[in-house]
Image 1 (cartoon, rainbow, N blue to C red):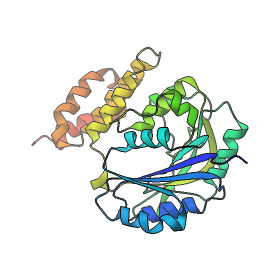
Image 2: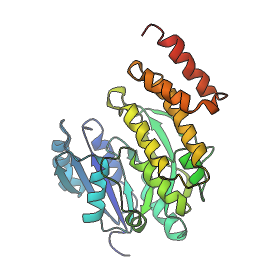
Image 3: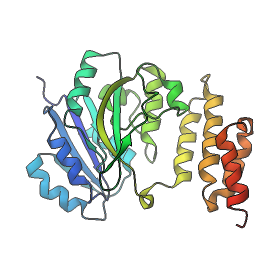
Length: 289
C-alpha cells in the first residue's frame, strides 16, 4: 500500500469546546494510511494549548499561524504540505464516523470517473445532540452542476477530493468565505460527483454568535454564480440567488434596504413563497424601523 493515500486537514479557529472530539474521531478512523495536518488559524481561545497537548498522542503535524482565513489556509496546506492522492477536510467543530475515510477511499478507487464524493451527515447541536439527518432526498451522483449552482441542494461538507482536481482549479481564492460552494461549482461543471448513501459525518449547527455575516456570505455566493454567466442555467441561478438574498436579508433591520433592492431584482419570481414571506418581513416586521 502506498504511503499517504489521503491527506486529512483539520483547520481550527476558536473551537476549544469541540476540537478534541474532532481529533478523536480522526484518530479512531478504521483507515489508517493517511497524512494528518492540523492548522490553527490564529485562535484566541485555548485551542492551541489543546492541540499541543494532544499532538504526540494523536500523531498529527501541527501548524500554528496568524489568522489567514480558511480559504488561504487550505490552499497553503494543500500546495505546500499535502502528499495524499486524496484530500479530506474536517472543520474542528465537526467530527466523523469511524469508517468515513475507508468508505470514501474505496469508493473513489473503484469509481475513477468521479472527481470527488460526499455522503449523508447528522446535524448536531452545540452539545452534540443529534438533531436529525441532513435532507438527502435530492442527493445523487453524476453531473449535478445545475443542482449545485441553483442550490437545489448543498452537498454535506464531508467531501473527499482528488488532489489533482483541486490543483487543476488552482485551489481556493484568498479571502473567499464560501470556499466549498465555489469549488463544488467548478468541479461539478466539468466532472461527475459521487454520492455515497451512508452517514459519514456529524455537522455542528453553529451558535448564532459565530455565524458569518449574512451579507458577506450571500455576496460570495452571488459572485461565484457570476463566474458561470456563459452557462444555460445562469439566468435562473442568479435570480434564485437574488431571491435568497431578499429572503435572508429581510430578517435583519440593518439590511432591509439591501433586501428591498434584491426584491426588485428578482421580481420575476414574485409567485414563489419566499418572495411573499420577504415582503411580509419588510412591510410588517420592520414597519416601525
